[in-house]
Length: 373
Image (cartoon, rainbow, N blue to C red; front, side, top):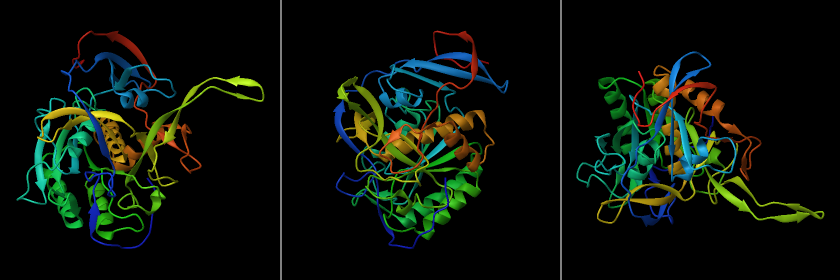
């Protein structure tokens, strides 16, 4: 989270819900048949260094993204370990509509604001995938967090307007007063790649003033993230996309160097010092919808999904620290991240999202998922 200043620009934005040819932040690939949801995790009661009682959950996962963010180093171990589940935290997803029927999200999605009342409730699968990264039952970071659908995309154009976003932000602030408690705004879209937009800067500031941190995708554009709006708004938590690359075995000066895995900036995504944290965003498995809006799972690419993972991490933190300010949430995400592992980021320092176990003592184990009193 840094201060950024640039210039004003136009009032239409390409959202991440658009096809890859447009300036969005994510796109999906081949569909994967949906599996019946497995139990999310096995909880361990643990005692953190601060003596505050927390719950450490552990589960087998098919999501390499969840697998990556619960450990400091590669290779992966097909396990997702995390403190808490995001229970009691609300995430406002600004997008093109979120499915209330997908098994990964069912029972935890509330219809909120729409900037286009005559539109269908869901334009496409993008909002469902972002919400799934945040709070999917088996594919999300915070599987008990609540989602509120803030629709700012017009389905016919697959674009949003600055007005819809700003009106949505004002609605969120009012709704938060009616439903108090820890909350986050997820903005998985970009509006401009060369300037700032004062109306969006003000919307970020207003949300933060209401106690709501704003998590923003850096964009699927190969430019300096400092120039991308709304990521250049002061106080936004800006998220870049990472990928895992395989480097084959080789020989250097006659010595054999074994094959190795590394974290890299995902291809054709924003770069530079203004990215606060990286999270997986290359071929990540998430809940999705087919052409008839029926539930499936699908592989997705893009910083939209990366932002969703960071919003989920913020939900885990706010579950344990429900009165934390937006600055404290940002500081916790940055402070707990793994430093210096993302290559080709064109920045002197990088942070990889980390939600895994902190200093804790395991006290007990259980075989089914439940809250530990």
